[in-house]
Length: 347
Image 1 (cartoon, one colour):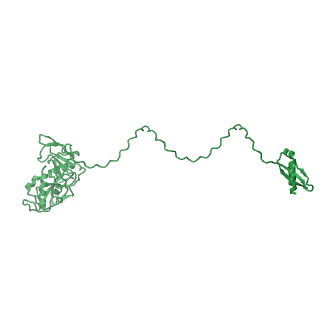
Image 2 (spheres, helix red, strand yellow):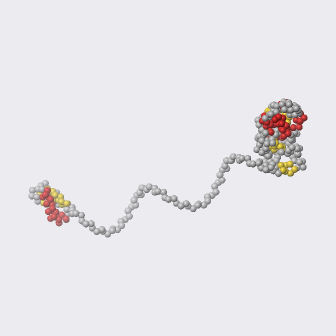
Image 3 (tube, helix red, strand yellow):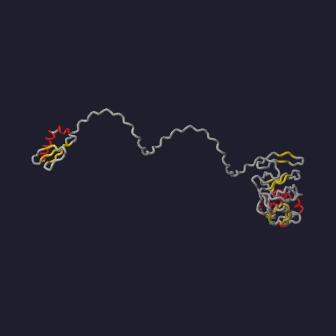
């Protein structure tokens, strides 16, 4: 049966080319009678039960490709498509050449003042100034004071030794000096006036605590302005003879006191200590021993305390003159008691 159908299909296709070619379909349906094997073309594509339906494909093999037709006219521009997703950032480009310098900007506001720097080291001591012109009284004004060593010396001005000028002998009453300078600090803690030795008295064998260095008459020569240096030297000589350390008594501490620019300090006499008190308390009083320190207010750099002079008291060899910088009072004080020491120097 299958062989028959195949043969029939070939015959039908071969003999019915005109009919099939007119058809609008690519397949042809034929019906084969099951008893007589007769074929008929089924235009409707259906067969009855007594027939076998055979569907034949009339499409041939692909023909040769035809020539390319002429290019058609360009079509109208389509609508712009939606924006695509943002692409990855590209690699950094090479560094460009440096541009030309811009114009200078406007001047900025002045900055705040910086913190004060540390104080510099003390400069080297300057050369001693030339001597001033002599006055009719014999006093010589000198310009060796101040921090630069060229300022005219006067009360309240820094002296060459680093202290302060407290007295000026402008009337030339003192043979030994024209200026009295007080030290910038006390020489030590409070000390005794006398050393515990037996090198005092006329024969240098008496206990110094209750005896004059030599005798009462000599002691009266060490009270006035201009006598403190000699009095200090006399005290030190007696006490050194007894083997006493200078650090153990007032005159000794003053004698070894030193600053960066001076080492010739001494314990002031009674009248010299009075001038120191006037300056220390800023009393504004006249200079000279006839005016005893009183009033005023203690200056910075000084303390209100009892201070030793180098002068022995005329009433007894056991006493020496002191002065208090609290009230300015002067009086006798036992040599074996302690008081403060403020050295002076003179030039």
